[in-house]
Image (cartoon, rainbow, N blue to C red; front, side, top):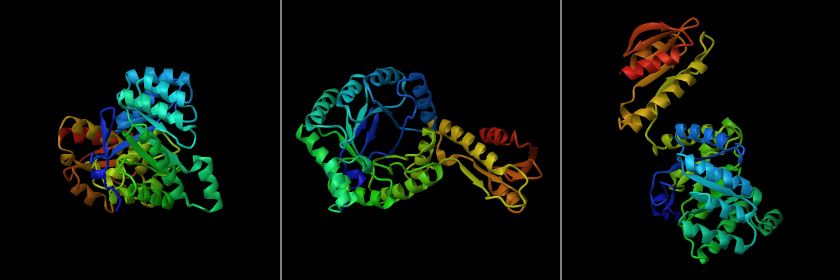
Length: 365
């Protein structure tokens, strides 16, 4: 049987516990210039506001490690240093204050390189994630894969366990593992196999998942299945998009599975030819604004389940009925909206002011 979340070993990334039954955390990764501290810090501020738990930064060279050190001093989030090719960058990142490392077995080089990194990480009491991707497997595993001697899930797991043995033989046990493919079925098979072979906490994701819509769907399918089976301790939705969108998608996946408190409840219609308002834009603006309010209330200790119910509807077919069931609602008219509070129409609002007025009424309840 696979190892479930409550039976994995626990590691700590900064102040965030991972594994051993800890809440599933949400990660993202920066895509700003790794030598531009201000750009990186701006990204960190945005993902932190979106609810990110752990943030990863690439450290491609020693100059980037110096930038990492500057960013680490000012970051509100734990930072993971993403290392490829040059093990010396891992040592530099540890010295720069990294809260964890990600190593790629496919390109980190000789065994002694990994042992040296493990020794330095153990001295600073920081964990290492073995991050295996199908696209960067070791040469011998790529050859096995291309010859048909092994399938992709088995190759991913073999790479991970091979590197785990190196770290554990060096006396290093604070290890998490990921085995990512861009194919959902291969990802599912790899994580199921890995979960049956180790008690390390698992970082779950679909690598190179794609742009926002297909990437979110692929990630939600894979993560939803695995997390429902008890597999996965921390997640990243890997999108060709802004990091804060990855965070939002990850949080919504956990909410849908009951692993995070539900966020703002916004009911909105799919629109039709009767709609004469910019409903999609207003619904998105309202949802985004309410998310910020919800986070403020949650941080202040107000129970999330007490959050007002909001509806944003396009026309008079279902709008008034939904408005009566919601605490605050917008019902589209001819270019503007009627705003309802507790089932009663209170005012007509423009498209420009609609989201703002909803938030103002929500704050007054």
